[in-house]
Length: 430
View 1 (cartoon, rainbow, N blue to C red):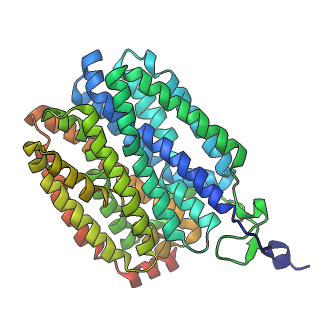
View 2 (cartoon, rainbow, N blue to C red):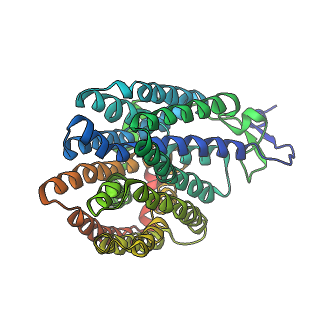
View 3 (cartoon, rainbow, N blue to C red):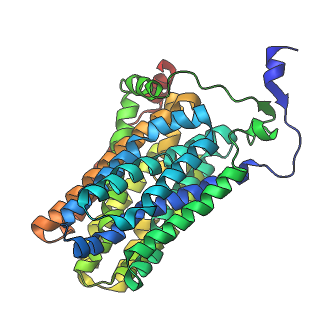
């Protein structure tokens, strides 16, 4: 029997594809992880009242967590390929759960920084968008865009859907109860992943979805810490990488770093109750799940550059509209913003991931997309701290919203500068 015969077999026919269970488990993991990343936005005002910390100080902790959440992404891709999904996710959930379990006993800002800035940032970063991209690459030969869209939408939706629950618990019982519920959700997902998660289609005797060939997983070669850095060094020579990273920087700045972190506090400045503000974010989450899933479907069929041009343009318009909606305190205006903005919350991920895959190839795209996500989180980190600092300085978030809106227009123009031929040459070079 030849080596190819040993490596490749014809997939046995099956009525149900186990990969959809992997998608469901990844969906639950990203949902809970992202929901926990959203919890600090509920804690800004309670911590300000309980501990006397300034809004800028609390925002600085959130900023560090957001940055590390992105920075660990490329290394997460390497670890996932080296050790498999189950081991990495279980370990990350266990560390995250432990950091949350001791949070009710914090008394100093440095303790909050350690648990939520460093530990939580690193642990949730292991379960970020790179996880969804890696799962789709391993388990699917077709419908990758749809799977990436569904999983990345779910990550953003988790941040938003959990907020009303956390806000209600904080309002009625105190912030510690919100933390306890978060710990319980981690334990439940950890148990499910430990029992049912598998690392590769070959583990269940299947081929990737859309393929008839059952191929053994390719062993990860190289150092798990050096490989991401080596891929980054190679990608830095590509104009496509810089344009994707640049647009994603503005993406992070205008989404989780700004709206995800500060919208509840901004609503409070205009007399809107915390629970109602969290409800607006939850509404965004519902529409984001729809919008980003559709974006994945569209990215399988249309020019991803043009999709990014439209997405960033509409997001810029919605951010320019937000100060007016807040000042009017009209529920109709705020609902209109939530729907319009929610559809576009993170719809940029599927076309960005597709362009990265086309430019750098299947094997390297996970780690390189991880570095593009780092740029996203640097932008988010800058917005998380910068918007809080501007609020302390000027007494309003309006200026931050307007600046972010105009930066989205710049991202639209940048997206159209990506050339397919140049991307192909970059992929060939790397």
